[in-house]
Image 1 (cartoon, one colour):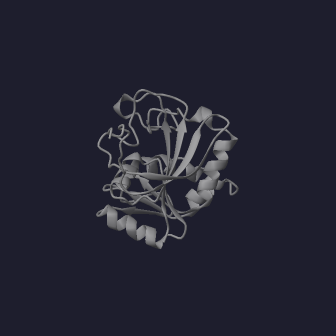
Image 2: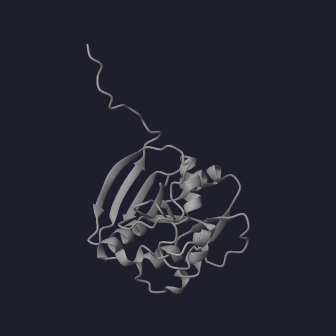
Image 3: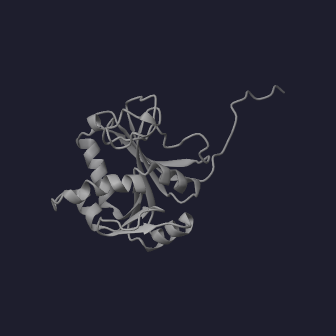
Length: 208
């Protein structure tokens, strides 16, 4: 059974929207698209290449799927470690409206997300990976279907934009499994989900 792995780019204030380009996602008047690009150094590239090397299939939300489908099929260099995986491996897009995806190897899924994704995990050899796809990722966290989160935090505050974990997200605990900081200052941390949070107190002990 494969693991469901989410890789997410966020700013210091938790914004997840449009890290890759100015026109990627301008919803709500967002004007700061492409904010992650200046930090894309060799350390960053090495980590991302490593993530894609473990992929067995991809699970994408409709918006991210459309962005990827407009770009990656045009990258035909067989040595490109990301394009080779995205173009060659199975892709599943969650959509209630897409009927005829043009990107080879794509299957549209809908209906019961928990059942569909559980089935995908069971038949995926390697990691079932989610990239971008914030709305889908939020649903997967809420359903308890995510096994691993790679959270890349960039040294920038944006002050506006959609968050990966918005108000009302399900309380969730994570176990840290490894990490690094790139030369450009991106904190790359990996976590496995560990159920619900535990709580304690720092109150002073009562006097005898």
